[in-house]
Image (cartoon, rainbow, N blue to C red):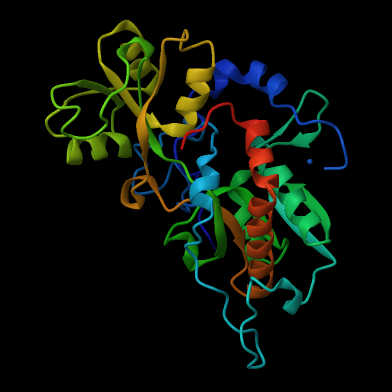
Length: 329
């Protein structure tokens, strides 16, 4: 049986201080619509980087759109009986589903959480509902604790899990994944007064860069920015404080959590993104996707087709902008 999974990429950092404000500002409008690293962020190869489930904030963001469109998973295999695999581009060739059962958890805002009225909401929840609407299927979204999600999928107690699971080789031993629907990049942040920078190893030569100790972000800096002065701090918060006080020139961190920090009060409006996103899979993962059963390639094809149409129609970007304040990509 699948071991306890841990949420991918450090997205929680920075959420706690902004929780009340974000719950109010990102609360979805009323209406008809709401990774394991199998070891998600705390049990992966970078488990020091992904400290705890609490240190990961939300984010996605939006880069989601830009990278989410690039499908990394192969087409589903032909269903039993020898028929050729249905082309996800032609979902009419795939038997439709009357209903799709989704599982998620409820303590990972703004992806999945209960709002002030105790209504399940969040980016993942609305994505599931949008997928069902696109496929003209009824949507059943249930909540379970994070460690129980993928095991329930393996036992056939749900059709899909949408809870920000990172695609990983370990998880793929037990479940399959759809195309990714968002990706978390690494980003630099610096003082607004500093102007534009050249966010390359040559452009940051001699610059003091703050980073959280023991993370993939620190490993990336030490591998590629060797001529910079890398200052590793025990927590992301201490690294951010170093940027605010001017002890360092730049901060390197998860782009999603940085987006919330920059947009929140904790940053004191000091800083902004500098340079572009960094998304090397070896350091920052292969993206976040919906987990499905390995024995149900038809559902994977249907969901992939729905994800593609949501991007093409603009509905995906609409959901992203509803929940995420800054574009991390």
